[in-house]
Length: 455
Image 1 (cartoon, rainbow, N blue to C red):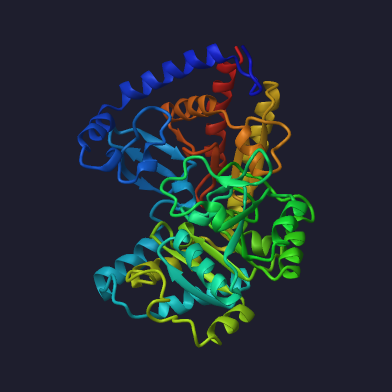
Image 2: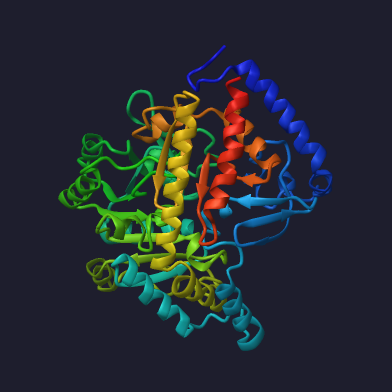
């Protein structure tokens, strides 16, 4: 039986069984390491590492640039890159040098004191994204949480509005989707929610200005927290006029706008905010800006910063302090400065985006050649193929287009031949060191997979 994805399910099942068997046979050390990890909850450092298409994870031994070597000695061409955390490549030399200098020469992994690097990072983020004032956390999730608290405080409004199937880390307020009746419901799999998410949040579909206005009209929304393009449910790009419409509606209804650029940073050196000339009140980001060292950051507009600092009822030093003891630590600040000033530069992004454009064009030709009803989306240096054509226009459509069995097969097939994609979706990210030869290698293996699927 052939489904909407355009593949025969019985053939797919047989091929997937074969590939999983090959995966296990070739990775005895990874399998053994997984079995020995009984004192880890779920046998992995973070339970999401069990999102593996083959039954157990690959254990990394070393990584450099866009290459990873596992404990069984297999080398992989890495298009996952830590799901954007290693967009600069694994252990880029300037970041390694800066971190080593901070730790080994200057000393002080954490001091609860500022360094001059922090001011330099704030100035560079301001130059790139256009927001003048910056503060730091350890993850983008934390940055989002603090932005939400600030905007609730300054507006006196209780609710946060997000897009259905958005991704803002583990922020409680974001785990809401549009239900079948058009109203917000808790997203499936939301573990241990402190309250019903509809008590804290409102939701609208991406690319739906009418739905957004309907929710804003209640008058209780402090802020719209959004990605300029959906990413973690598959790339969903904004339609013409949509983002300008969001900005106009938030201003009309007195809600602030937060752009979460953690994944959309792939759009360019100033993310989608600079590439598409956006004007958020707050911008949050993490992962990639410190070259793989944990970091989160949030920037504030001048007007918002003035409104917050002008309040004498907000404790911004003790109870209101954000990020924890380790936030803004000397190591993460040194890493971020080196990464932004020397690695993820404007010139580097030009190369990465050109490589991604070649990657996307090649994918389209292969998919079209096999007559599959799939599509390809590109967001700067980030490319993804979808098991749907036309491309989904919102998160709900994107979720409905998922095909877990097909996705898992392709991931294991590629891994068995030395190529890694992001395990949660079919995303490929270009690093500064990704070459056209790397692209061609992926495409050759991908074409072989499609040939077997359509035989």
